[in-house]
Image (tube, rainbow, N blue to C red; front, top):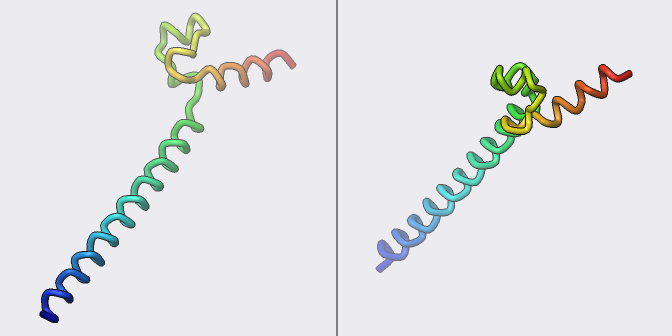
Length: 73
């Protein structure tokens, strides 16, 4: 009987640790993705869109707007 109780407690502990590990991995992955997005430049845009100044298709509209503000000063 004690072995069954110990087994159930051990299984619950293992499942809890797995869940904690998955949440930590997801949080780390989200942080890495946001860091990569913040490091994008207009050079990352496909050449045909960069020539036209349209970076909305590749998600770089913020970068283009920042560069436009810098050049307008």
